[in-house]
Length: 234
Image: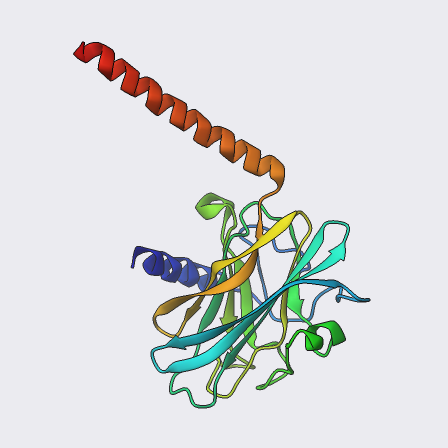
């Protein structure tokens, strides 16, 4: 429950800072309007992972497809498409993706009709030509290190992804992700929030070593406190 409330709070903050400017990179606290990738994926990127999660919450049924492609040179493309089935009785408002803390996000946008994406199961959008979102915003460094990237959904003037609509193929390009993971890194809202499996980047080895050192230090501190407590009692 706390996680869902936090997701809703972050999503509301992201949508509140929406602008219509287009920019290639998306730094913490940044925002952008809808548009194609500034530099489209080309050639034959390597598919590293592919997942289809069924979406079911309230009056909504649909799906969230996510995949990871490698362009080489340490660049990973995290690719998503959200579908609201025609049998749904409710709309979808936002898609928030997490675990981008300290990640160098160099491009965000959509890219349809790219053969490697189609081969991985991504389809043509249904609803319009603006990507299926009104804005994309990243949380601030002060809040959570820029971990959350939120898409405010909808085609044209609508701020909703209605039944029967699917977004374009949405791409988040990360230049410093050495690996990736599949977990509950996607939150979808239709008035309430639901968490779903999707791919996201994981920290570089240096960051993991630093985190491990912090945890080791904390464990040593706790052991020292226990020994001190034992000495006082004796």
